[in-house]
Length: 524
Ligand code: D5M
Ligand code: FE
Ligand code: ZN
Image (tube, rainbow, N blue to C red; front, side):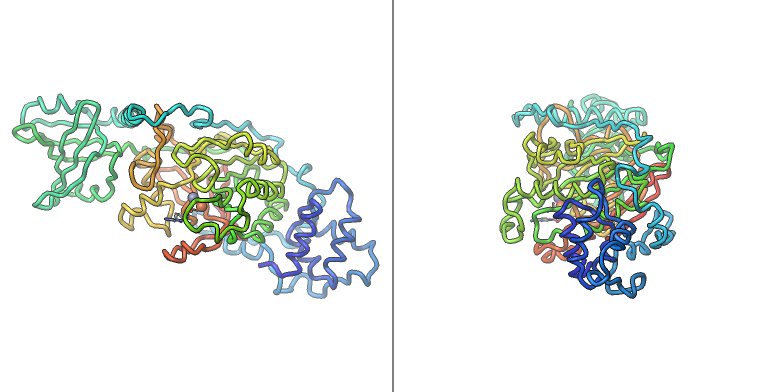
């Protein structure tokens, strides 16, 4: 963590519109009079300097009388002040190897004079493509008919995915087939209940009606029952009972991602940093860590990071849950976004930012959530960030990233057994969503769905990366080639989280190599 004097230095610099890298802050805060030295620096650096690197600081101080500053004795070794770098030893990548230590001071100095505008970023950048965004397209009125259309569209899209794998018939024609014949159905799970003998009765619904399927408790496929969620679309194959009134299941299939799926990758070395749940305006927002993160983004070692994706909960919001005002640092929602914009300004100009809202943001709660209204977009326009709805698929450098805030993850974690979904491994419920090819399969619990005529939450196209947040826990892992990442948060443990024993993963940033889909976590 930063010492008090480093905090003062960072604040002074920010007040004057400068970003500084952690080494420069460390250098300044170890001087005898950090504030005076910082003031001197601010006066003396050229106007077009955007980031104060330690090199610039040292050069500038060379021209300032010794007694005002006096260099620290133990600049490279002082353990009392740490920077983001020291945490990097904990970096992990997917293959479990630890990342090499980052640059030493000398290394940083070599290109320290470069401002973000002059960095190696963006020369080869491709255009960003966004699809599946409900913003400006919302036409649902909330009438019953809209829900019928929504679920029809879900069924259509997901049954299409299953159609080539099973020879299914509609429910009303299956009941007319002769007893004992083989049959297959594709339907939405309407009900799951156990029979008096401990078998499982699954009621499937399609546009023609409903049909019961029986999964025998002693069959291998019985374990699939644990994974079933209401309203998801599955295929069941089996044998009809003598009276054709029930289908004895032999197999259950999910829409799923084919095992052979090979994700697309970038054709050059370029990285994306994935974050979410910034919660600006909360007393628990970790401001120092944010400054360390954005300072690090200005360093040469972060030069390959050309994209910053933010998966919702930019601000803490107001009135999100009872008693929330006690935990608000900023009580006005517009001021929260203004402050968030100030923090966004710290991100190098040449990093492309793409963001979607979450359940704490000032947009409708029901999903799909449109991107922000014009007033909020204007507030957040500081960085030319692209703002899209929740969910959205963003293609960067040929790699498609499905961004979804992740409210349904709470539901999956509550419903599914621990080996399939826990808060500690938030990528596991994400794997389940990929398997079900739907971002919020179960309707009616925590999930609020807006009845649009089309279901934006179906995972129609297979993404290369699936990025969520919301649960404030970090985790990543591949599912059939798709990289699922939950990016943790920037809010230390809240009172509510204390009460439910949720220990958040704070200020760790998964960085993805878009050319290999390897992940490295940098903690600040
Ligand atoms: O959600 C952060 C995490 O904490 C997420 O897993 C939901 C959970 N959470 C937070 N507040 C509540 C309440 N009041 N009830 C149930 N679950 C909650 P976030 O979206 O950042 O609030
Ligand atoms: Fe959150
Ligand atoms: Zn959330």
